[in-house]
Length: 422
Image (tube, rainbow, N blue to C red; front, side, top):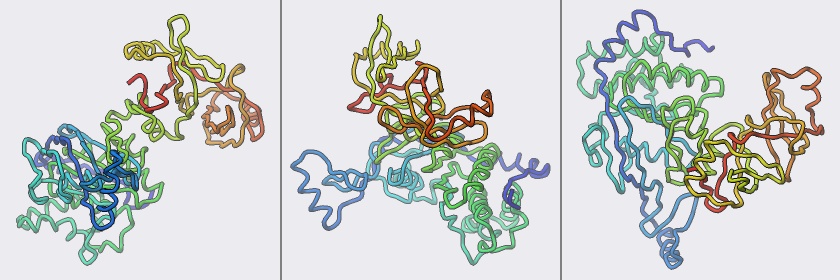
């Protein structure tokens, strides 16, 4: 582990933290039909008028364009509890950072209402919202020392010097950056700079802490370590977190609940386990999970009153839970998109024929990239109960058969992409 990167909490820091916790405010948030529209300029306005006759908004760079302007976020609804850790996740340009900036007051809200606690804050200045934000690029003052960067917001509030000194040193000890207080940001690593940015945020004791892709500038190893440290930090400061990322692994490991966005719209809100086990649509199914969920063209059929999926003659009866959900929705037999995660596919003696293209040894498992049914499919095969000869046999060019059970199947409407169990 790199020096100065982990956050060990010494005993005296734990004692100080007890007092630190008492003073931090907590707040619920309510985002009600929040919308952000960027007004047209120049050619955009002319293009929008021409499209009006079509009746449908034009798609451009993943966002909808209407007469009013470019819709970056539309009808965003979310209730956030005190001390909850919410993660907004989605591909670039989906509107997650814009949503965060509207909460911060850095972007004007075009429509809807934003409440922090019981206070409507649509027109409240950022400095009066009692929030703090950690930016992707750290946003530290290069001419100031670490101490001065952390203390800056407190000085603006005319906080007494002795209180500033106490809070800065407490935060620095919690984040294990005490030894860097006299240094300038240019003398720090990326991970250390990010911790300075976090320290600057938490000394303000905000009701809400906003984090906009704070780990994206770090390498893979540091991201993994910092992710764990953010979890520890969350346990040490009692505040509400809203965290933005495009990395679904960060979302799954950090969030109490995840908000998955695409093209300015919320696709699904749920716990990490809920969105993994019960994806609302094809986008969520494909976005959450690594490697990505395998998708097949299949048929949903009924045999003896029971739902089953027919994949090119390989028929699997669905689990009782799925039977009940489909029956409740009165789902008819139809062509579907069948989704099965790589870790839920097994090698079997009698199943679907496949040819191994690539075999990736990952230690306790092998990732097999195979060709079957006219498409590429990924399987994750555990090596725990396999002999060396069996593992060696799974090489490029070898033939295998695979199958899956009914409780791991996800069936989606072929036209709308919506999960038929939803």
